[in-house]
Image 1 (cartoon, rainbow, N blue to C red):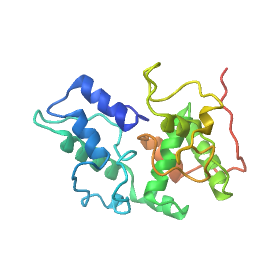
Image 2 (cartoon, rainbow, N blue to C red):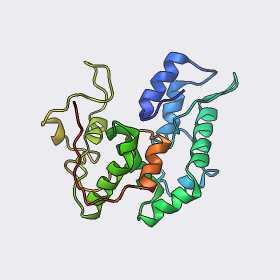
Image 3 (cartoon, helix red, strand yellow):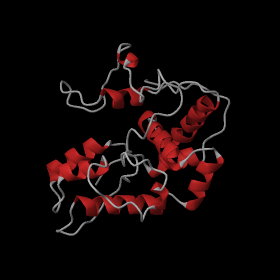
Image 4 (cartoon, rainbow, N blue to C red):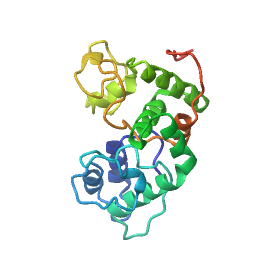
Length: 214
């Protein structure tokens, strides 16, 4: 069972701990990173994906039953097929109506996934980010900086908390404090709710939101 909002390395770590079937976590990551030959022709939603782009974001979080002889390729095919089933033609059309490619929509959904505390907040957060994109304003999303920073050995996490002002200066195309627009690709594997939020964002005139920490 893969929970929502994990990045691929966290999924691989889960596989290393649970060791389901014949699924090798290193092989899983190699396929996700496009370091191994893998046929994507059966997934039309990936037709526009650059040849070097990771499969991050398209590994649909869900509970999967696999046969005892399943390998990493089997699992990834299953996850991609599930993504294709859950992301409906209506959702894809809604992405296009907003001027978003599939990769851009999934990238934004992954940021919404990591930003939202409550599921019901996702459509409003998606709308705020779309407002920022429309005026070429930086998204200034902490999770993108966390993704750029990578694994933190001291805290044994992929998502550094708290972030310091110095962290926001990391020179990475994923740092949405420095670079306007969307990062090159998804920062995690979003839930259906976050994907739906990008398809149907809540309209508003807002450009900012603040998390209530009470």
